[in-house]
Amino acid sequence: MEKRTLRTDRPGYQYRANKDGTIVHYWNPRRAVKGCSPSLSTIRLPDDSTDEQIAAECQRLTNQLREEFRLLDAPVEFDGTISSLIKCYRYDKTSSLHSVKHSTKIRDYEPSLRVLDKSVGKRRIDRLVASDFKRWYADWRRKGHRRASGAIKLLRVIISYGAGERLHGCAQARMILSDMRFEQPAPRTVAMTYEQCQAIVRQSIEMGCPSIGFVEALKFETALRRIDVIGEWAPTPEGGEFRWSGLMAKDISKEMILTLKTSKTGAAVARDLKSYALVGEAMAAYRIPDIGPVVIDEDHGKPYWENRYTEKFKKVRDAAGVPSDVWSMDSRAGAVSETVEATGSLEAARELATHTTTKTTRRYSRGDGLEASRKVAEARAEKRK
Image 1 (cartoon, rainbow, N blue to C red):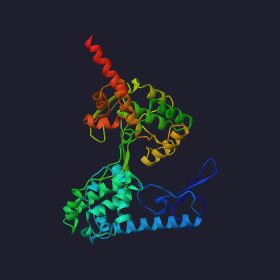
Image 2: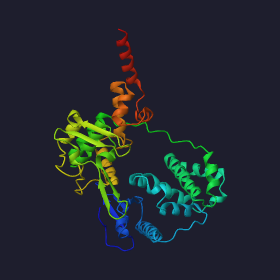
Image 3: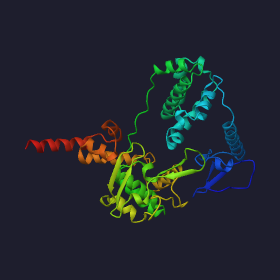
Image 4: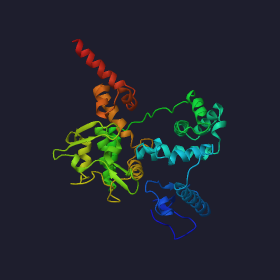
């Protein structure tokens, strides 16, 4: 993407032209405010926006970001509102926000905190009652069940933080919330199939971005998480520039044995890449570097930022004719589901996915259990002989 014109009335503006001639509009925080964190995501603007609307939205987002920067160095005071509690939670280095993984913070925590701040930030905590929480949840759910669930989860987190810091009204609000239950969103039922993954591998090669096919094939065959394959850009504990950590060429031996410890549980993993046909097909076009990170973004010559990987994956997926409800994360579910169907063993799938318990594995096994039950029936019948 690049600047459309040199204009000062729409800071951070970028655009991309589609093949059909339509224009996609974006606001890029890194262009809008000098020195802002590279972790901040580009925001897509409505496709039907007029020039005046684009300028107004770019100015609003830029002013909002500058205000957040200004507040970084300002003393945070709790005034009894949810908004001020969020500020305390964000800027208190002892809060749980600063102990979760960077990817979790950006993907889960920050979006939900923005929902809370925008929709109910002005409300005083010491005046909240159960009906407030029920009404808020219903309002949020109209815009998505997962959005509502995430907002309630973070509301519990920040109010518990406030109670621990003995901020006025938080202990009582936490007590009210602790007795309340909200319907959780249904678990995903989509799992990437072998045929879909193979189509993505082949399409990525055709589009000149074989790294996408390699990543998806590796995840589908080994059940590794994406972060364990593409790595992660995150700030250092001391702050400052972002640094990358992840799968390195040295983690794959000359015999093509991949070894690592997973980022989530620290479980030791060893995988023989020679035994995976789909990985072999992907590697016919994608060459693993001799040194350094294993997965490199062809467009930038560096490891992927998560949002860049997601955007490129979507383009390859769509071009491959794979349904849009199949996400990159579903290749791991595909690995688990295929393993259960092929072996009839939930335990085998648990070991492949490095889950702590089979309870978690069941959530990833997206089939109806028909094939697995058939294999169990065959095994039992064979035992009776």
